[in-house]
Length: 174
Image (cartoon, rainbow, N blue to C red; front, side, top):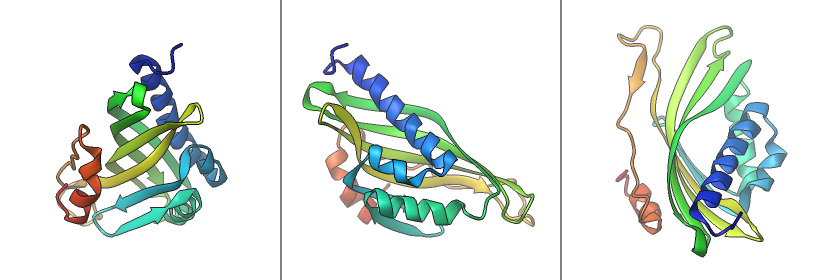
């Protein structure tokens, strides 16, 4: 298959997103270095707090701490859309996801829904995550809430202009 074709790139990028979901579900943090570039910046905004992480080690440590309280945790990719310039070795994507969790408090099942805006680069003959921006858009509400989910606006960054993402995220405009 021609590595510069859009369909080939799409398949490889979906595999990369699936690998991320598998790594997080298995809690195999050392494997993040096989899919995240060493300088990959990951911004995580759960609506309760926001953090910026640099590199696979920092990302793994952060996620490990966040999911440690769950006796069950599964990361599911729900849908993804992409803009791909295969010839240039660059792509961006919006990946919708769900976290299925149990254990905080013990035995309680909860969900979280969010979207990753991903920037990819093709280097050394393969695709890598170059940057990721995550924001929650729904999560299981507190037991005493009037609704099952706490719901936020769905964040959208323009896939055709990933160079604007840092500025938009810093300004809160997403």
